[in-house]
Amino acid sequence: MKEQIAENYDVLKELRKIRKKHYKETKNMSMDERMEYIHKKSKEFRDELAKIDINDGKYHFPFLKYEKKDEK
Image 1 (cartoon, rainbow, N blue to C red):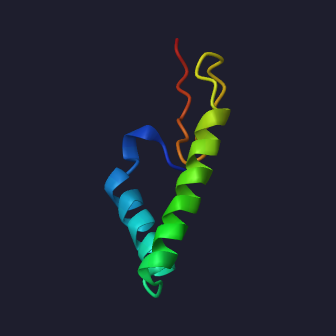
Image 2: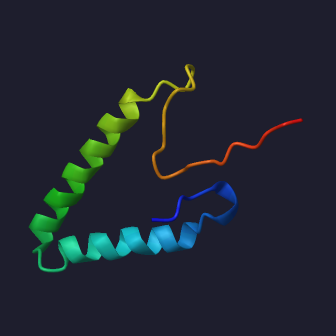
């Protein structure tokens, strides 16, 4: 897989991939099942956000990989 760097990272492509995955996971669910699924995913997201400490600057987003440039 090609390494992603900030200059060639396609945000729209990633959004489409996420939407497609979400559709595949929920297309055969009833409304009640879908609401339960959304609630579960929302809770997982809130739990992940609670782990982030923006003050230490060490939180890592695995889908963003920046190429280090040598400064001379």
